[in-house]
Image (cartoon, rainbow, N blue to C red; front, side, top):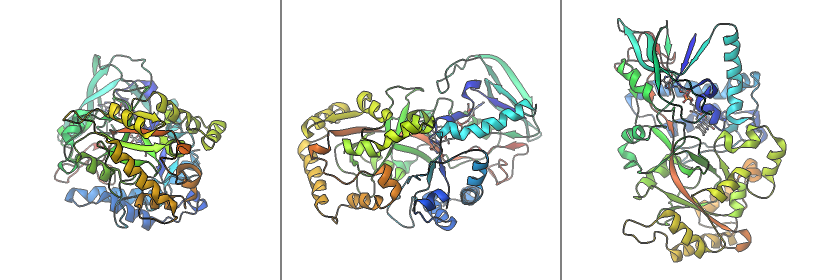
Amino acid sequence: MLVLDQEPAQSLGGQAFWSLGGLFLVDTPEQRRMGVHDSLQLAWADWLGSAKFDRPEDHWPRQWARAYVEFAAGEKRAWLAAQGLRLIPVVGWAERGDGRAEGHGNSVPRFHLTWGTGPGVLEPFVRRVREHVDAGRIRLLFRRRVDGLVLEGGAVTGVRGAVLAPSDVERGRPSSREEVGEFAVRAQAVIVTSGGIGGDVDLVRRAWPARLSTPPREVVVGVPAHVDGRMLAIAQDAGASLINPDRMWHYVEGLRNWDPIWPQHGIRILPGPSSLWLDARGRRLPAPFYPGFDTLGTLRHLRGTGYDHSWFVLTQKVIEKEFALSGSEQNPDFTGKDLRLLASRLGSGAPGPVEAFKQHGADFVVADTLTELVDGMNRVGGPGDDGTALIDEQELRALIEARDRQLANPFGKDAQVSAIRAARRYRGDRIMRTAAPHAFLDPANGPLIAVRLNILTRKTLGGLETDLSGRALRPAGSRCPGSTPPAR
Ligand SMILES: Cc1cc2nc3c(=O)[nH]c(=O)nc-3n(C[C@H](O)[C@H](O)[C@H](O)COP(=O)(O)OP(=O)(O)OC[C@H]3O[C@@H](n4cnc5c(N)ncnc54)[C@H](O)[C@@H]3O)c2cc1C
C-alpha cells in the first residue's frame, strides 16, 4: 500500500493532530458514572433531529449515520481502549440543542475528551502505520500532490500529480507549492481521504447556501492551509458524485489567534452557557441561541443581522470556569497528560492559554466599569455603516440589569438563567463548565469582559457520495470502478 500526502513527513496525521480529540460515544461507563442515561435509540433520534435528512441524495448519508451511531454505541470505545486510547472521565455536553425534543442537539453529554487530545487520538494509528512501514507493507510518500485520477476504460487505475519541493516547515504551517517533478502511480484501488474545504475561504463562500443568507466578508480559519478541498473537484472531474456541498459547519465563537500557526488562524471558544450573547449592535440573541446550544441556528440568525461579528459579555468568574479553547495546542494539560497542570484548571484563575488570549487577543475587552467596557467594544467592533457607535451603553446596562434581577429568586422568566441552573444539575458542568449564577454588574464578580466573536470555518459536511463499503458512486448512483473515497 502506498500513502501519498502533499504535506511533509512532520505533518503526518493532518487535522487530527490539532483537534481536541473529542469523541462521540454513546452509553459509556464514563457517562454512567456521571449519572447520564444514554442509549442507541436516544442518540439516533438526536442524530436525525440534527441531520434533518430530507433529500434523495441523503440515502447513503443516512445509512452512514446509522452505522456510525451503532459503532459509537458498540465496539468503538472497546476498540480504542484496546489501542491504548484513554478518556477523560468528565463527559462534555456539546450542542445542547434548539429547544425542541425532536430538534437539533445532544439530549445528554456525549463529548468524550481523549487523554492526550488530538495527538492522543493519532498515536495508535501512527503506531500501527509505522509497524506496517517497518514490515514493508506500507510506503509513505510525502510531498506528492495528487492533481488527477487516472481513468482507463471508465475505471480509476491510479493517480498522477506533482512532486513538491522538500519542506521543513513546522507542522501546521503552510508548506510551499513549488513543483520539482511529476509522478504517476497505478493501483488496484484508490482511496481518497483528503479532508474538506475549510482552508479555502473562496471555496467556502462559493458553496455558501442561501438559507444562511450571504457569506461573511470576514472569517477566521479553523483548519490548516492543506485543507484546500482540491481533491473533491478532482474526484468529481473523474466522474465521482459530489453531494450536499451546501452543508457545512462553521462555528460562531471564533477568536483571531494572537499567536497564529496557519493563515487567518482562528481558535474556537468552547463556551459554557453563562455568557450573554449579543449581536454586533448589542441586541441579545433570541432563545435558544445561548453559548454551546445550536451552532448552525445561531449562524443563521447572525447572518441576518448584517454584521459578521457578535459579542459575548461575561465576568471574570465566567471566564475562569466556562472558557475552554478548542485545539490540542490550547490545552497543554490534556495534551501533555500533565496532572499538575490539569489540577490548576480547577483552582482560581483562567487556564493559561485563556488568560493569554485575555491579555493579547485582539478580540478581548477587559474593564472594571460598564462605561469602559462599552468604549472598548465600540473601539474593537468598529462603527456601524453610518459611522455611529454600534453599542449603546444605556441599552446594554438595562439589559444586564434586567438579567441580574432574575437571580434574586431560584425561579424566574429568563430562559438562559433557567438553562444555566439546569446545566448545573449535571455534575460534569457543575465541576468544570458552569459558573454559579451571579450578578454581572456586581464588581465582586469582575472585571467585566467582552469578547468579539468571528465566524470560524471548520467542518465540511458534504462530500463524495459513497456506499457503505466506501465505494465512490457516480451521479446516477452506479459505482466508479476502482475508486474508493470515504472523504467526509
Ligand atoms: C482545531 C481543531 C479541533 C478539532 N476538534 C475536533 C474534536 O474535538 N472532535 C472531532 O471529532 N473532530 C475535531 N476536529 C475535526 C477533525 O480533526 C477532522 O474532521 C479530521 O481530522 C479530518 O480528517 P481527514 O482525514 O478527513 O482530513 P485531513 O486531516 O485534512 O487529512 C487530509 C490529508 O490529505 C492530504 N491531501 C489533501 N489533498 C491532497 C492532494 N491533492 N494530494 C495529496 N495529499 C492531499 C492533506 O495534506 C492531509 O494530510 C477538529 C479540527 C481542528 C482543526
